[in-house]
Length: 464
Image (cartoon, rainbow, N blue to C red; front, side, top):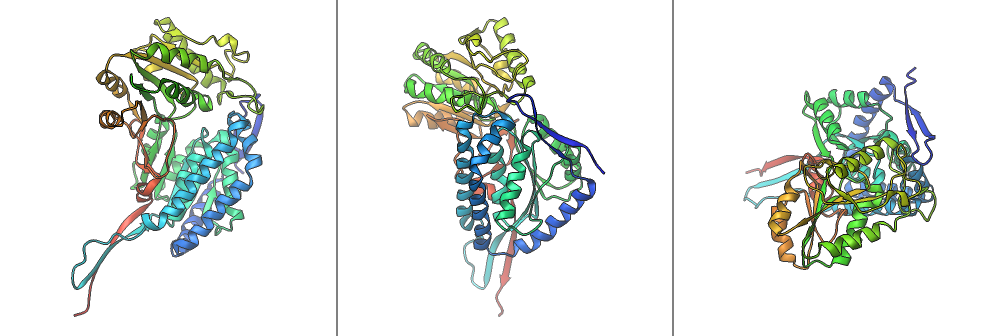
């Protein structure tokens, strides 16, 4: 019997919160076979019937909301006051993709030709392997799970060790919705087992959200197969505040974009460039608002900043800050004012750095924590050059009252999503995608459906 265990150690107090045995080789083989068999019948089910099942999955998940919010706090440290937002976003994305499916999956019909019927069907791939991260565990998983099912695929979900309970919630919701046996399966897998599943070629699409290092591992595992790979990886997302911006609005939203979820967001704001004309006003307001955060136990409704997922992650960010200040950066926040902040602890105060430049790791390497660097710039051209000076390209934002300027500058910024006057957001009607080391492929929108299906052309000549 395989007794290897996957453990979730809670960042709240360092205790063991969950542990589960990894699936045995026979369990994995059986799951893949069941998925393949279940998918054949599911693919023949009408789209309206699939939609009924998927809608019920959403309802079942929402019915567990009271338990899910504190579970998230225990598993990954998000303050309980924000727990409901995760499920609201889950429902928004799922319902949008369910409603969009008839249009997105409709056959493509070219200009008619007399004597022929011609069209392109969108055929399901087969089995989709979704590998989800811990930082937004419901939102990232639903991006693949519901569209894959709506497309006629079976789904195998492997959730992060830190959020073992989330994969189980997905399984419970699917079971309660009456989904056919084997069509959706949550598997507890080690990294080595995950790689072997991909190497076998027995899944048809892998959708991975995680680190750049993890993305390389996924690609290596798939290299001997023709399995499709979708990657949503890291970010070092920039913002540019122009001189004509509403500074108060920019401050309010960029502080939230930098520090929500303790900065543990691939599309969180990690670097900001501010026009010299409004720089002083901006950093003053930014520091003042940052100081209002309440660092503490995420199960306390008053807490607005919970612990990072692990002490080692917090110490990594502390190291970036120390290196930057040693190189001349200036910290605007007194970490000592946040009483639970301490080296070796996952509880970390938010930090704002000025007098930074791109020679510092905090401005060039992903931090994935509650720190942001702010630089003064003298022109649009200088801001765009700095925004593009990165190995990442997930999202970027421009803060201005001039929509034409945002559109023009946006075409020059190397990014998957360009925002104006907002950040750290996702619209399920738009493709979620990245460039450079932020990944490849897309989820959500009609474009997301294209990665979960393959085209099949029909060229039918009428009888003469």
